Amino acid sequence: MENSNRAGKARKVPTYLRVFMAFLLIAALAAVPVFALGCGGEKKVEDDTTKDDSGEPVEVGKDDGDDTTDNGGEVVVLDEMYTNSRFGFTIDCPSSWSAVEGANQDGATISSPENDDWEVRAYASHDVFGEQLESVLDSLASGKEGVKRDPSNLQKGSDPGVEWVYDEWTYEGPDGTQMKELVNVIRMTEIVYVADAIYPVADEGKIGATMKAIVENLVVST
Image 1 (spheres, one colour):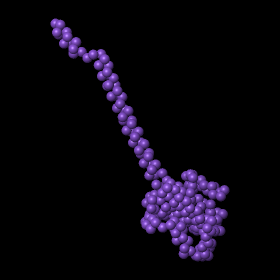
Image 2 (cartoon, rainbow, N blue to C red):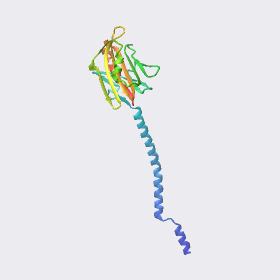
Image 3 (cartoon, rainbow, N blue to C red):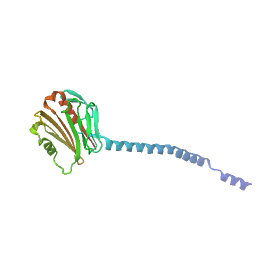
């Protein structure tokens, strides 16, 4: 009988052990939702980071992405955006303007319904030869009659992985009309992006500030 009692007592789990096992069980159950939450949180951060790295545009020549631009005291509203999916760039323009994309999808011609002579060409190409950006400006100015360039209009700059130049000049159109041309050129990751605006000099007061704002709002993606 004494041996039987001892055997029965031996099969009982000590109180401290039961408490310890209960603690382990509670901790294990609590860890399941914590682990799931941690995995979900990790994925979200990773997605956000990827989105920022690949989709956040890099804007050259402007401090912010506001579509309302102050050009020489005149407020210009650019409430429409052309996006080029092939080379990953955008350019802002007034909503009434239309964009016609080229057959090879390297860019588009953006024009105003008010005047056929108000036109912006935005396009990109692979920088095969690694030419100086100023040579892009020279090639655009060459072949035009009566080109007048003021060296003080030339602007250029660079950031890590990015360089840009801006220039403007006047020339004589085919019908003798004095035209003005504004050009913004950006190079990033061996691709050259160009925004090229032309309009009659006589329309400077009507469209000059808008054209400059459009050209300066050329935005390329990282």
